Length: 99
Image (cartoon, rainbow, N blue to C red; front, side, top):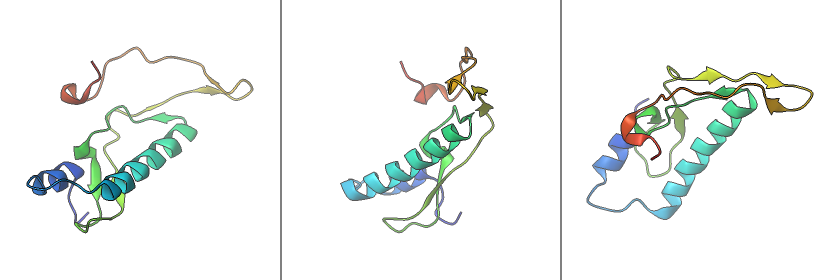
């Protein structure tokens, strides 16, 4: 991806605020990616700005969710539409973990 990652994109514009509309476009695309993964029974487990790639450096560009090294397939009971098994391991990047 020629635009680099989201962390670098945000860091390069540190002297200015990211316009709300640009942030909304990025967040929506990431949420759509997560929604798709969840429909397919996949938990990413390491979403962070470094794992979101930008197609280019224009203010509103397409983003892609990457790095599925910590991802896990979640078995789903088709009849009840419920998750069969909970995850009990702590994974991901410590600096981005929930408190």
